[in-house]
Image (tube, rainbow over the protein chains, first blue to last red):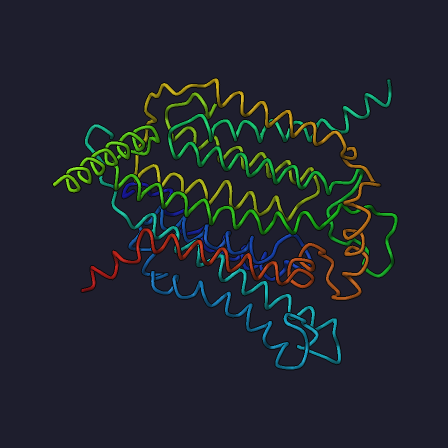
Length: 146
Length: 141
Length: 161
């Protein structure tokens, strides 16, 4: 991929736009189609695109393997902690009224944003980690298969 | 006669999804290449999703994103949001499990040097025969 | 097409196109959230992963002489049974089907009062069915861990030592 100048320039431009769109989908998910699952896949797709065009070493400078693998667990942790937060304040598990008891509607809204953020983080980094696992292996092929 | 026509017309989408699903199933059972099997499984999966979503569809309905929030907008028909929620999560879980299957294929290829099911079975049977023969020799001696 | 093609690259590309077309079908059936996910997942990430697998394994399918009669019979039998099962179902798009009457309409009417957000799908996903979504997230994480363990985890550790 050393000689693909046009691809490289376009990719540099597109990656930022894709991540921005992913963040929009993430945090606007309660007003328009979208949410954590979609946003996670979109943001991961930006990193995968960068990895395909620029090479695996370059994308791993931006997003190291260890970070992707550990951050995947952080999302589930955020989700579960939101649930346990409710238990601590005397509500049921994942009952978002606990976040602002005097105004349950706002509590629900904040809870949904937190939970979707957890889902988004997990999906993003799981997809990136899966991509790294697949791309990080060197193919050992016989000569006749090429 | 008219009711017959509306019955067929109303059930045709389900039948089309079932035919699509069967083509996926056919690929899974009749092809030996493991990557092709995964593709067939994906077709199978997607057609089940389509079937599920079609149950929630209402004639003349729109996407379940409320248009007018203050008034109770009974004039607008929304499709059933519940199947959408179930399928939304199922798609993402589906890609994660597909990735797991592909990883297993890579491991199989490293171990057996092939991704054709027939060859793998042949090699397995050869190994089994060898193992049995060795066992017989050991028990005899 | 996926049956007769020998080149896996073409098969994988066609499956990506199939995902994109099915995303359009989801839009037609009012499931915009689902269509969004299918377009991003099916046409994007899964195609990339399958291509990576193809690059790591083989590019061309081998000629095989598998019997075709038995799978055909099995598939036809399953198809007849499934179509027999749909005969009792309500018409496509009907208003009075059991699926429409109970839970779905309830969610539509109470979501805005409870949470103040217009996207009912997000409301159900994150709040009413929060347990489900927590479980699904854990499944995604577990599948990712499985892939990492199978393909890269142990290898990376050995290199460090």
